[in-house]
Length: 371
Image (cartoon, rainbow, N blue to C red; front, top):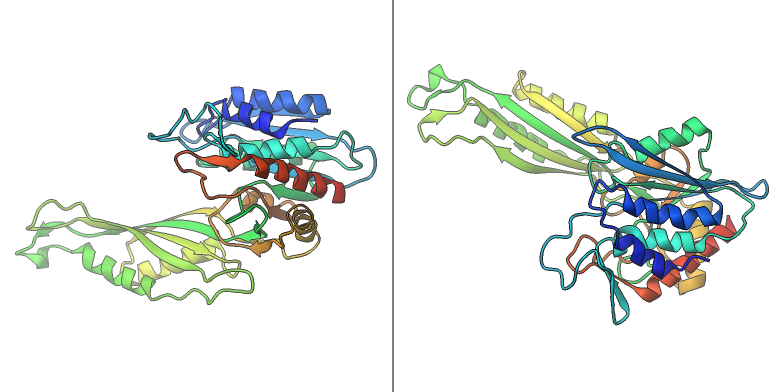
């Protein structure tokens, strides 16, 4: 059996700032092949969002069981300055293992590998990308295409993101809100402030547009989602002169939305507001992901029962937080996210409790036994 702590250390010791490639994938492949997995590694995309390395590992079952997949990422955010020790030299201090990626999410991947039984009735797969922390253009989306081309779409999927808040097992994710960013440009006519009739000030129209947008109430939330929200995240003119009416004014919005909305519909709503005040206004919308929900049922119960058995905790089913690659995988099959305590992810001196890694491996082991 794979030692979860040892594999976590080896993964941390392979620096993998997004987009990850090379050595860190070598470590994972070396751990999976002795377990009987067929490992496909491939690189997708070109600059600026690529190239990205991905890994799909799969092992056929011994019977007619279902296809269960685990999804995760080997890339990490840059460590930054100020660490107590080398962020890519795993170090145990007391009951904690320190290193970039310890929580998000190399220990989770190691725990799942350690949980894989020698034999299982159904197919087991790992869907691992090197680009979750970055643009996520050529990562999990490309892996989905790869699985579809091979006819290996899973029946159930567990994403190992760090979902626990105060202690291991207190929260799982059964959905996520969608995200769309929108850039608004209002053109005008530059001119001298003393001769406003010869110019066209775009700022006044943009201010009216933003006031209307700020007054929009998208919804009051649902049984499983908090209310959707629109936030103005940037306002820019760049006018360095005090006596010049500028030629353009720009703003940026970020909308996090629940499953009452779609990214396209929200972009259309914002476009209509802009064009009502400024018909020549330019609206550029980029949808990061749609909202999704895996209604409580078989998969969430399966994971919750395993958590309760190991930790004694009844996990909260939540849809809070930012986006994850589950937004893509939800198009294929029911998806639930569950992993380690997220308190130190993306922070200096990121660390995971050794006991939590072992407990997570046991939870994943019981999940696989219950599929």
